[in-house]
Image (cartoon, rainbow, N blue to C red; front, side, top):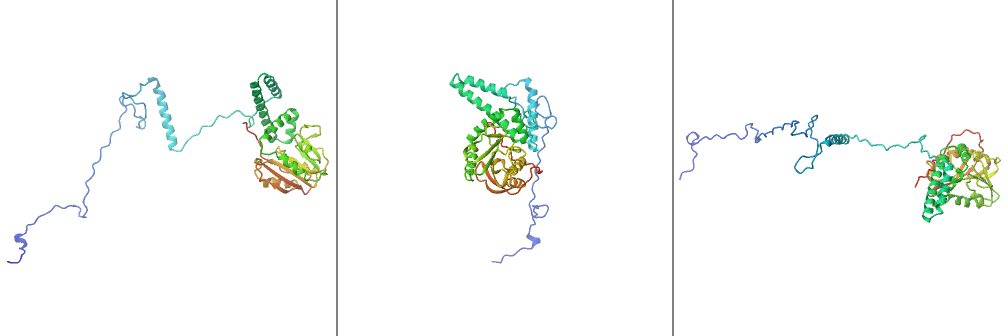
Length: 359
C-alpha cells in the first residue's frame, strides 16, 4: 500500500468560492435595517369626527355616542365645552406648578379688628326677658340661663380685648362712659377663673402671709379686693372702679398714695394695657427702697422673659426670684433698688394680649 499523497493543486483541486458573510470586512454580521412604520396622519375635523381640537390637534374628552351611552341634550353642549376647557386649564396649572388658592371671604371690620356692638340697654333688656321666660318652664329656664351666659361671655370678650389693646387712661374712660361694663367684665372673669387649673391669687395670698404683719401692701388692679380680705396686713386696694367702699377707684398709673409709703406692691393678672412702663414708674414712686413687687401673669403673654426683666430694671427693679415652671402662670418677685423719677421718659412696653375665644 502506497502512502497518501496530495495531488498537485493544479491537477486535482477544485476551487470553490464562498460568498462573503460581512461585506464590510470587520468580522461582525451586518444587521438588517428596520422598516419604519409610516406616520399616521392627523384626523381632520369633520362632522363625523367632532372630538378633535382645532387649535392644538388634541382630543378633548366628551361623552361617548355609542349605543350604550345615555342620551345627550343638545342644550348642554355649551356647558360641556366650558367645563372641559376649565378642566384642561386647571390641569395645565397643576403641571406647571401654578396652583391658585381661593381666599376665604373677609368679614367687615373696623380698624382691622372685629367690632362687637352691644349697647347696655340691649343687654339689660335681654337679661330681663330671659329671666321672665325662665319662670315659666324648666326647659325655658335652662335655655334662658344658656343665653344669658353666652351674652355675658360675648360682652366680657369685647371688654377684655379693649383693656389689653389700649392705654390705662383710655380704659379708665371706657368704664366711666359705661358704668355697667366693669360688673359685666368681672362676671365673665369669674367664669374664666372656674376653668383654670389653679387661681394665682391664692398663691399670692400665701406669699403675703409670710411677710411681717406690719408691712403695708398695695394691691394694684385688685378687682373685687379678695387680697385685702384674706391677709391681716394693711392693704390699699386700687382699681378703675370701686366694687366696695374700701376700694380706691383710680388709675393705677396715678394713685393718690404718698411717695415711699408701701412695703409691697402686688400685680395679680392686672398688667393690662400698652403702657406698662407707667405702671412700674408709679410703683417705684410709692414703694420704699428695697420694697418688693410680686407679679402673677398668664404664661402665654410672655414672648421673652429676659426682655421683661430688662424693662423692669429700667424702672428701678431687680429680679429676686422667678417661677416659670408652673403650667399656665408665671410668678416673679422684684425688689426696688434705686429711685427712678416719675417723669423719666422710658420706652413703652407691654405683654401679649390674652384674648379668650368663643366656645
